[in-house]
Amino acid sequence: MSSGVAVRVAAARVLDVVMHRGRSLKATLAAALPALADARDRALLEAIVFAALRQHARFDAAIEAWLAKPLGPRDQELRALLHAGFAQLDLGMPAHAVVASCVDAARALGRPHQAGLVNAVLRRAQREGLPDAPADAGWPRWLAAKVRADWPADADAVFAESARAAPMWLRVNRRVASRDAWLEDARAAGIAGEGVPGLADAVRLEAPRPIDQLPGFGAGAISVQDGAAQAVADALAPAPGARVLDACAAPGGKAAHLAERDPSLRILALDIDPRRVRRMQDTFTRLALGVEARIADAAAPGAWWDGTPFDAILLDAPCSATGVVRRQPDILLHRREADLAALLATQARLLDACWPLLARGGTLLYATCSILRDENAAQVDAFVSRTPDARVLPLDDAFGRDAGVGRQRLPGDAGMDGFFYARLAKA
Image (cartoon, rainbow, N blue to C red; front, top):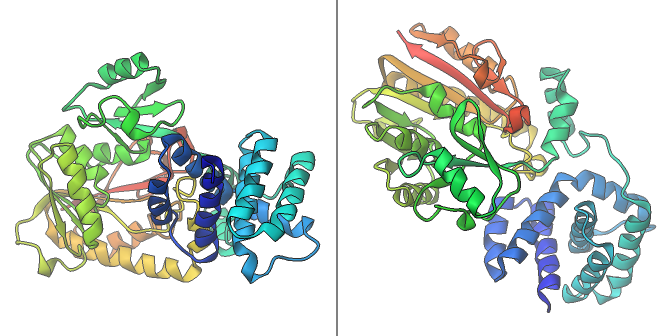
């Protein structure tokens, strides 16, 4: 099997388990990528899969319109292969190569009797182009309705931005290199990027690159982190030497950013998942940071808290992730309406559990990568109303749109992910 066919086979298999079996895109890709030896093939696989998932509703509509006989339950892998082919055409890849490789992939998948169908459907897509679909076609109806209710003037832009590829954002570790110095090294290596006003450590690249091929990665000079997530360090702004809790810390980027900025901070980073904590520890080791990572449930402090209050707490709460659909397009396939009620309860429980751990005069930053008001402004409003010693501290428009008790970014605002921030002080 040629490497080109191997990539298409892998794309069909990844898409099949993500679209039809409810598996996580991140975990499925992590398992599939090591089988491809060439970094270019790995990059192509990721590009195909992400493009297909961002347009899955549009591609399904084309299949339903163009096939005389609907695909059955045993043809899900074939459906996934067609999605992979459509994605390649959408990405502007040479049509003849797309068709030929996908036809060969059908044979490699044990479907030689369907190779002719793959050829015919992809050639029709080449001739006619893929049909358009409404901007919210890929969103569950209940979720699209919530976005429209919360952001009536911006909903179509949210849907459109969520279907686009996100830019690659980097965080420069100021303990290793200045941002300007890193940008000079990048330019010398032929990599185009720019610093971003208002985010002292952020760089946005013109085109994505494999992280391990960027200058200084091995030395801990850079990490991948969206600008919206980098703004957390400015929103929390702990004092030098402060004792800081990152309550739901994995994968550890925000705790790492705080430690890079101020090595005097005493940071405890928690997560309930042992595997995620191990990954955090690997990150802190790579960056040579003295952050303590611990397996613990922030909502049950009786099992781990030593009774010493924290000066600052970051609660980056579990959420619907509706602000990062462009990075995690499988969210729209897997999110269920019942999930939201469970998430709202978890967020409230975490706020109530973390607040007693905060010292008087201390600051808690509540953050999510959601754009839903129920998870954000309404959640904070409810907490403040039941917590007499909590008061809202203002954040300026550098953190996004005014959302009453906090600030909200929508996907694509200043090129960033959707994100919510609310800063609370303990009287």
